[in-house]
Figure 1 (spheres, helix red, strand yellow):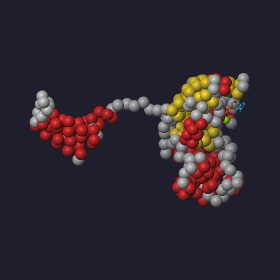
Figure 2: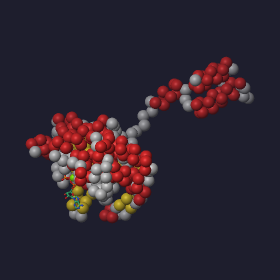
Figure 3: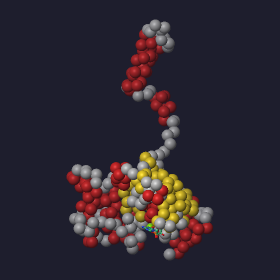
Figure 4: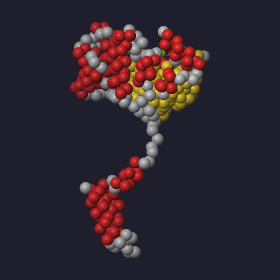
Length: 312
Ligand SMILES: Nc1ncnc2c1ncn2[C@@H]1O[C@H](COP(=O)(O)OP(=O)(O)OP(=O)(O)O)[C@@H](O)[C@H]1O
Ligand SMILES: [Mg+2]
């Protein structure tokens, strides 16, 4: 209706001539009126359509470029580039010791790296120190990034002395200082979502491994992070319990969550990922969509890795 009103005023302006009269006049006044209305009410339909055609570059949630990380003399990451766009799942695969967990911990700033850029939603990590002493230089930025990148570990890391509900509520209340009743509602909701809503009052030792890992996922979700980082979330579980966790991860992927996932489970990597990265000795040996990477691996190392994981 507002746009119609604008159009009518414009037509009214046209009746009095398209160009403003030399010293002002009705057309001039109405043209100005129209400009003012467009500013207040937003563009008319053709202008709005025109705006939609402008392509804005997508800013990845996680963007890591040329990352180098050593432990003493041991070079673990040797120039790794990896990005995760919003709503996508990126899986990291590779042999033991290839640097997968290190890369995830560097992304979360749990580890210092010596060289390279890490951006979170376009915001570059601010570094202090020189190459050998490099570390994040802005504590509030570290907290902001860590709370937006929730990590799920292989060994659950639940507090043994707290109930499952308390475990899930702890970080949002102490780190984010959110309201208790709001956090409790959210925590119960996430525990329901991962299928253990009936275990709120149990302690971790009273749960199976699969249930504990699902509690750890609910805890990560309760931070309402921008992205989730999983480091081998199923490898401590026996095959039956593993499937409970795989189902939860698949559900999160279909919800459009942004995730980086280190896994030895090639089936899960193939099923949930938009992009798969094969790391070998701290470098990306091959990467691509799962159909290409698993269906037609190019590098001999990846071919060897896949055939060994299929037979184990
Ligand atoms: N804190 C540390 N101090 C020294 N060396 C480390 C440390 N953490 C990892 N490393 C070494 O870095 C290399 C990469 O380790 P990382 O844990 O990233 O491998 P990974 O690919 O996750 O292996 P896995 O599949 O076995 O979990 C290994 O050689 C490991 O021994
Ligand atoms: Mg690891």
